[in-house]
Length: 119
Length: 108
Image: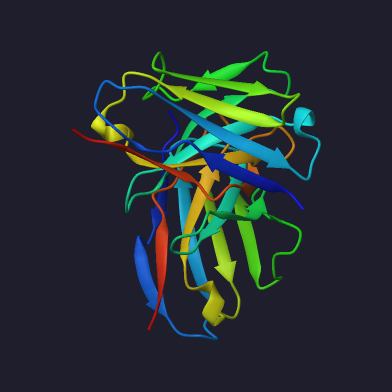
């Protein structure tokens, strides 16, 4: 059974930093592109970032480019999101999601971890 | 960036109804479209990809159609568990991915 378990979400002040983690199991982690998708409270879904199976390619939404860094450790079946220079508009539930066949749809999602940026 | 617009934003229906949700892309995206269902407090669930391919385990009452700019998600006979919010998502401009704003389906 595929499982994605996010962690690391907390309350942080504007300008602060945070690292999210996602532990994957139930599939061959290093075969798949992985993503972060977020959802602000009461709002829709927003794609944040993706990383290729080997970590060699990374992409970001314009809203987080230059502030967030995605990475992975295939030896630990783990995905990460380093979030710097946080803004109040980054407040959201952050989901880790597995790419279906490295084409851009998400066949499995974690339960999410909540990041709140507030003073 | 490709914009995805869903209609309606919300509506109500009764169990047993046939319902259709529409998603329109701001430019042609071929069939690079997925649909998700999200229930309150839960993660989204993939229903359909490639505009019309049903994800494994998804009931056959769900179907998708369309290509280019106009797409539809149809639920042929609403069940109580289908009341949720539905999102379309384009991946034509992969790696840049965008979602529609969502359609909330409520019980009448």
